[in-house]
Image (tube, rainbow, N blue to C red; front, side):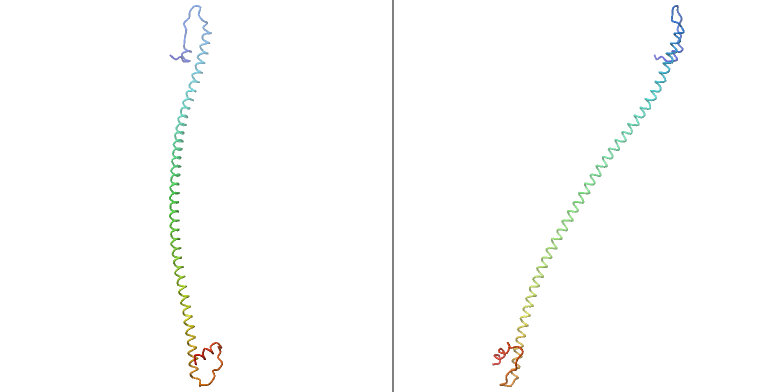
Amino acid sequence: MKTTAIDVSNKKFSRSFRGYRPSEVDDLMRDVASELETAARERARLEDQIDKMHGEVARYKEMEDTLNNAILLAQRSADEVRAAAHRDADTIVREAEQHAREITERAVRENQELMHETRRLSERRAAFVDSLRSAARDLGDWIQGRRWQEVIEIESVRPEGQRPEAADDSDEQPAAHEAAG
């Protein structure tokens, strides 16, 4: 059974012969009661403090749980962001590689077309140069034939025995003379 300060204060001892002095016993009882009362108050204060600390511990545990959840959520979010960034990067790289392949293929096709066009134009140029040479040769032959024709016509119009006048081109005189003869 628990003894309280009130129990000690209200305790009465029976008197006997040769017992303790009542005043000393009463003084001791008052001191013990006072000490018990002080101890009871201190105990109540400490219990209140313990209750408060239990409340704070519970609050801190709740905060710890909240922080742990926040950390886990942040970690998951970071993992998701990292995974999304990797997916996006992979997509961008694949698209860039595909675009590079398309550009390369288009460049190769254009290069082949340009090479074909260059060969075609080179062949056309060669054919055109050949045509020009042939036309120039034909024109030269025509001009030369025409001059001979003119010389022949002039010779046939001139009276016989008359000597032809000096022609502008000294190379053609002997040839004209031979043609006439």
